[in-house]
Amino acid sequence: MLTKEQIAQRIAKEVKTGQYINLGIGIPTLVANYIPKDLDVVLQSENGLLGIGPFPTEENVDPDLINAGKQTITMLPGSALFNSAESFAMIRGGHVHLTILGAMEVSENGDIANWKIPGKMVKGMGGAMDLVASADNIIVAMQHCSKDGESKLLPECSLPITGINCVRKIVSDLAVLEVAPEGGFILKERAPGVSVEEIQSKTAGKLIIEGEIPEMTFD
Amino acid sequence: MINKTVKNAQEAVADIPSDCMLMMGGFGLSGIPENCIQALLEKDIKGLTIVSNNAGVDDFGIGLLLQKRMVKKMISSYVGENAEFERQLLSGELEVDLIPQGTLAERVRAGGAGIPAFFTPAGVGTEVAEGKEIREFDGKLYLMESWLRADFSIVKAWKGDTSGNLIFRGTARNFNPIMATAGKICIAEVEELVADGELDPNQVHTPGIFVQRIFQGKDYEKRIEKRTVTR
Image 1 (cartoon, rainbow over the protein chains, first blue to last red):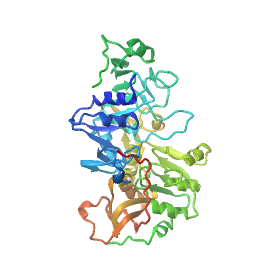
Image 2 (image 1 turned 90 degrees about the vertical axis):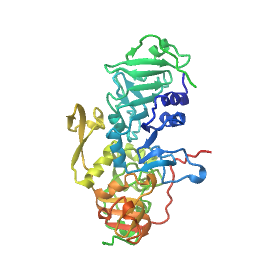
Image 3 (image 1 turned 60 degrees about the vertical axis):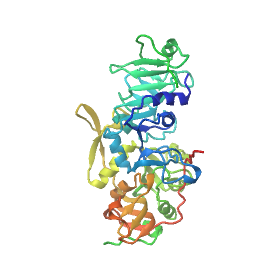
Image 4 (image 1 turned 120 degrees about the vertical axis):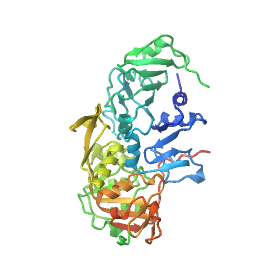
């Protein structure tokens, strides 16, 4: 099973040079730590910044510079600032190439649920609905099963959904999977020490297994 | 030039009545109009509808207005960091309208720009789409959203001049410039109010035509929600 850091590390391998990328809160934020230094990529923060730099040192903390998770951040040479309408013009207009976000559930046709649990206080969807409705390339970072052991990769989402037909790839603690255009989770890679049988038993949605499934490798 | 200057926050908000609709700039606690929130707290008004991306925290920002039960309804995209908000919501004292953040921003932009409605992909197939017109463009589904306009919009800028031209700083810009355009009366509080001619017109983010009142703010706390540092 992968740790959260390893999920982030595996997702970082999907990043290509020249991409503008939006990272969601949680595991997706960690992806920034593993993007190879020789790739030219720009991270977008939907509250109004292109070119997110590292967290500041204590003496450089600036309350006027935060990311969408409200953490203090820095800018980089070449950064740009803009207002919220312009930020979502970038997102809905298809100018952001890759969106990486967390999920509570994903369905085999690529629907995602990550904003609301019935019976619990609803905090809001923030920018998630705009992001998933717009990006061509969405990668989800998630745990394969809930704490109770229930699969979160389902035939249909049981929770209120955030967007339909949008997830392309999933990196869970057990596997890398792609969503097939005609529906179903195509198993691409296994986490080290995790068998195909275990992934099958923990995937409630349709799992497509073609040939030998390689084990992930980490540098 | 038209001088928009008022003396202070108290004068700027003096005519804001109960049961009106306000927009307030800010993302989290960054770029919120701290002085006007304090001045509103001193007023005996209630029943406010507030359009703001977030709802502050328990003891700062819009959270203070919630504590005093001055708010009837929040129109926001994310309201997660506020226990009093949760209590009032669950008890039915407070209404909340949750809107995707990009839709919220565009509804405000549209309100200021005189565009009554537009189509967006955000929320198609979700409960956000319930009751809304859906239309297909180039093979993809979009839903119709309408503009948002307010009686007053209250924004916070870094610098401003007496004509109401504004310059924002960092990510404290966020919703402020668009909200400035969508209030019948826009009140701007600034960290530094300068005379006309002292701002470079090339650098102005919000032209003064959108701003009706401006004042020099004071005692900014600029509270940080999640101080995160590298060692």
